[in-house]
Length: 330
Image (cartoon, rainbow, N blue to C red; front, side, top):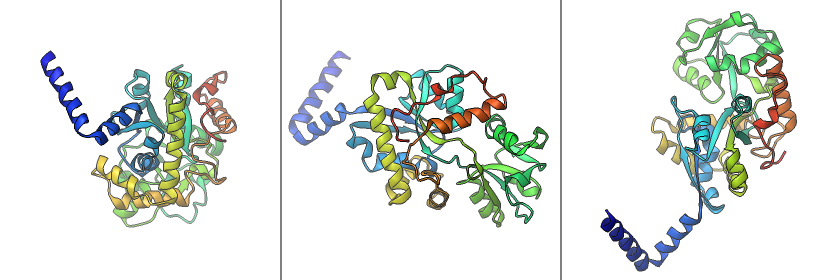
């Protein structure tokens, strides 16, 4: 084995000696900071800004060697971060960061690339339904995770009750079978699926447009990385911000190409409609036109006030451990 290693080193040295350009490229790559970034689901438009930043060289220009680690049903991003299996990870919603603070896990949100959480409630077309408030009393299909997440806000704001809850199995069949049933969904996903499969356009209520204060598409970083390599965290946030601006307002083709490569089950049509929805509903910038990644103390305080009032978190929890504003504009 020692002989083989020596042979390999010798061949590598010979190759570099024969190709000065290749030697410079290798040295440049070695000088970059490696960042493995775990996403919260399989490659899709909802992660488009990160893929765009990778495809257009935004990370590389800032001295980072980024590899996107695709998520999926069995992937737990906070666990990967806590175990040191990845350097950075994606947080789907504000509850994830707040849960980390409650469990005293040294990981926090450093940026939020969706000012509006794309969470929606979906109903059959009905002239009587003017707003989310009109869904009170109707059966609502919810996942277990949603019951301890945005459902607490719906109960606090609209007086929804737990007897409305029905089990959501991530299939649109129960929704299609009963016109009174409402189901949860993502602005960029389930409404499109329903329209293409069932042939009608459902009514879609975006929680964020009625005051839901949660962020989405957050970047989560371990405290140890923030302390040891703050410049790398800052570079990742800045590059990602450039990627999101380009993906939403520019040519998304570079990012889409990487998404389709990582996730062959994705289609250009699904990507196009998802990006169009994010742009039309101002998911990334919000109605106030915030800079990509921005967070504020006020939004986090509002979010915590609602969740703690419903008993999700103790009222004396130091919720500020869930995030830092050191790497983003307000």
